[in-house]
Length: 522
Image (cartoon, rainbow, N blue to C red; front, side):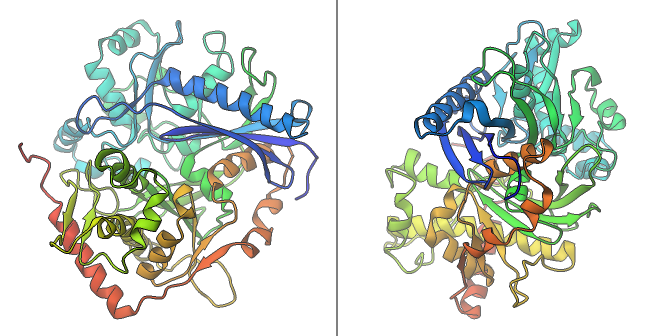
């Protein structure tokens, strides 16, 4: 790749862990460090993080990665040009401007405590569940930050008092990190980027600013909201007290949008990221497409203050890799997540078992908050290998459901030109290291799946954004390089069409069984 020699750093703050990766000018990772942090489950359906623990995890990751790079002979101290930041989206924090301390734990994106607020608004507002779709592209749902913010404003006395005193500020994880890294109570910058802002329900997709009518309707004070910036621009410098003081923060994107950039997805190209959840985005170009099939209208990226905005259709799946964690942590069927591939490969099929991980409801394209998890088709023949394989299939069926909806909305499938006119789904995220999972995905879709050499494209996307802002890379370096796709692994479908059709019909029956189960009593 072209560009000045040196390094770009990338903070990747995910749902279960934080990483810092250092890239050279060829976009190769030269050092990284990862730290897992605590998940809190105070009640059924509630998920929280400790913002102070997340902050500390970022500090540790930066320091450790720098040490590793230096030990390997890389002059990162003198050569780090900027850092980018990518984060779990929607997760909501309100904190004190004067003390810098959170007023409550962070409410995580998958948390479902706001269902009663959502139901209330659906009844009160003339447009029901779709009342704000025209402005923000999103339905009223427990998923989005605005509902979590309302819950904090209505239920936490410390938040109510701080808002009255003018001492409260709101942000998603990116905002919390940037505010602290640029000074905190001593002049920290209160900003967010367009992609994270697009997931709050509060940003107008066309103007890329906070929507005054929405904020007024929900009763959210505008003064607690951060300034919205693009994904690629110099935001500020890291303050003293951090491992890399004086370094520019020059890129910021929500994790799924960062993966779009990391995969170099242009108009008509789709990617699926497999992590705690699974997130499928199709770049629709410079015009937002309204979905008629249960998808979200959102941003792909905006690579500079004056750059054109790329929009996307997104299907969000709440539980993907988290189902594997459930097998490990709650059922003890496996001891590590990596064991599931070997266990599932011991059988050639699920033996008629279908598993739907609707632990806190179903996201796209179903949007059923009353859904709960089911495992059906169990017989005396069923063993843990069948269940493990059914868990892997559940991830792939959910992705197929979303892609089918995207095809209907976009009118035509996105394509990666491979000379054969095939639709290729680009994949990334830790779970894609599972070859069986990728083969199942190709089989159930009936189209090829492409896995890049570097499957951690989320961190790479944030690095790209920062590198673009400081002139380290140019856009053609990212979007016109054919080297990445040359080295990709392609999984081609091997399942017969009739078998695929029958399995999809059975999956749809299983999904229907999950509906209207939220009120089951013990």
